[in-house]
Image 1 (cartoon, rainbow, N blue to C red):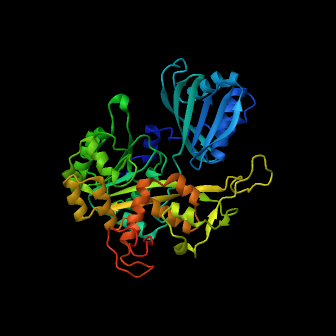
Image 2: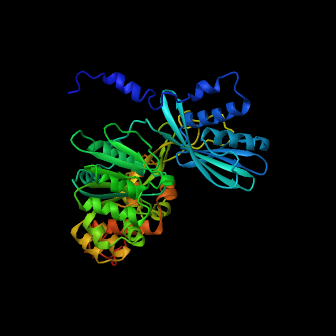
Image 3: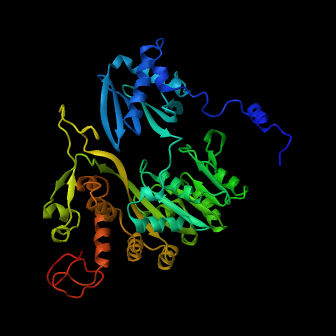
Length: 468
């Protein structure tokens, strides 16, 4: 088709430097003899964070020193305290690497550092904040070239995986993924995109920032300084003959309305929202000012998720929780008698005998817990009528939704995490009530005395046995 044209030469002339071709390698830089001690120190901090699979680096000026902390498996850990005199030099070096104004110390700043590390291109999202003892710097680590995990790897529950796969395979509508920052929302969305990625469809994404690079799709990053935000990008997408759209975050009314309009006009829209659980998404959209009838007409489903720490398989110990501990999670000891529970083996401080796999933390890596709400006819009707959150939750549970707590307890039964971790991340009063309601709806006969039960009863009124 393009015979007679030197395509290779034209490409070289148009783009002589591929993205990342001039990316400085961290390890090579740190080994330079001419490197100053401060530059070498900063490089070593970044290398140590990458080597230990940290997700964030916190550099915090304190009264007596400069505290370095890494977030590993969702938990912050103290790494080292440097002399206080190094604070200005370390923060200035990081600001130079991120192309920030080193003279501005009274206002927060945001930037990005890109470096190579063992054949990969790593991005560090940098945020500075003035504090009492100097500027605090936090870096979020992003592996832009990381291999994406598929739904088969992310989901341990085959039914939940099938439900989400069916939602992501629809030709039009909107799928919301909710959860706090760092809960794996982007990973879930990219897994859905990877399943839809095909030469026959046009996929476009708008993100802040672009966390992963996917071949075959168009990815764009917001630039608020130039007035290019999520809603502006969405309107531009609509003129680009789209099939599937990904919006990094729905944070205002204009973005929400534009996304819903796209979903109602024959496009599949994937986006994220910040709220506590799946049912709370309706209240969050209502607070933004989105009309309920638009939500009920466009929404396919809501996924709420959390990441819990995975027990280290090399050192975890069998554990038999007591009846009171099980009751704390709404469980009955007699129903869990055949289950082997595990707990982490945490090494004492200063101990030389630590597990090499987890460095004595007891946990290694994280696993997702999911709550998937599928829109049904009764649920859509209730949303359009502005039903209460409690009523919407009841309808979702009746429709078969597994709660976050229920999913987490299944992970405990599979030996993937511990009850302590489920309590830390998933156990709330609302979640416990919802889980009890879900279990109550699954049985209408008392296992203790065989009496018939009504839906609203959480325990048998005849023998006082808790429904399970």
